Length: 268
Image 1: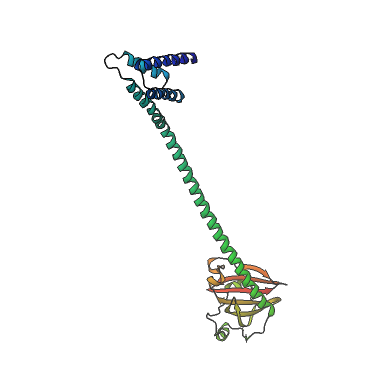
Image 2: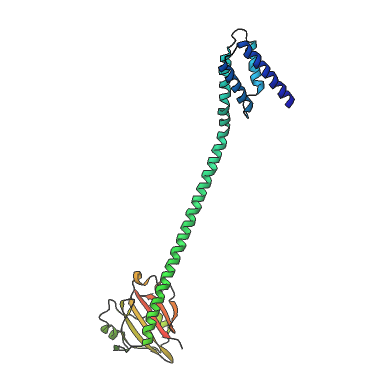
């Protein structure tokens, strides 16, 4: 196959040479002809020697209107110039496919990152809320535990809630009975009285109870402010109180009847 191609190429050279000599090309035309031949030989998918040779035979056999050497060169240049365009057309579908695949990958990556970012943000927000709640719960527990340990003298002694309310005139809320405290303790518990205190800067009520054969228990009540105390378990919503152990004191924290409540009892 290669020998046949070489023979055709040699024949083409001889034909071009004879044609050039017959037409008496100028130096400029001869240079352009040599350049055309080099371009045709180096093109990967350019014009083959057989095509050019066929063109030569066609020109020689055309006895009615034979083109000049300049026409031959111009037409050959035009044929060679059309080859890259044809190759470019062949590559267009492949280029479009690559662009489509790249766009699809970009959309998938963007969607995954957006989903991941959303999930991470939700996880971070949830973790942040938990950290804030836990941190504030510890602060509340530490403060009520210190007050319980000091066991300062009662400012008012009474076993009646109504009398206790009459005393706490400086509060911006009304002290109430706690259903959680009633369920958690037996009927032997008895109110001893109360005094003013504070929880994280807000004025609160400290109410002390005695229990048969048990350590005294202190109930703290203050107006619930979520912006100050953070999210705390709400008894009416079925939440269980937060249980912490601070300074040797068992502390429970919850929200009931719109009030933040906490109990403190020394551990036996």
